[in-house]
Length: 85
Image 1 (spheres, rainbow, N blue to C red):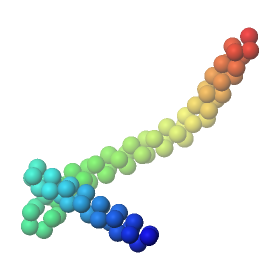
Image 2: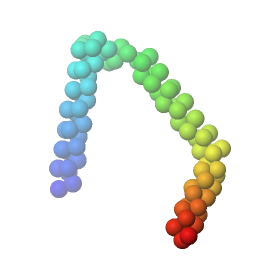
Image 3: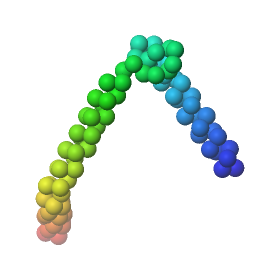
């Protein structure tokens, strides 16, 4: 049964990949000959942007993580105090 599920998943992924490649060809980003994308710099740029966002999120988490914890704790304590009063 697991083999059938794996095969269905692989087939669905292949269909998605073929649709994506066809769309890229229609938009002129891929070569029809070899299936390689001519828009490689675009992929590189998106990868660099994603990495930059990841680094930024890591820095925000590092420097503001404790402050957010304190903020939510204070908010919960204040909410609890107003409910009991």
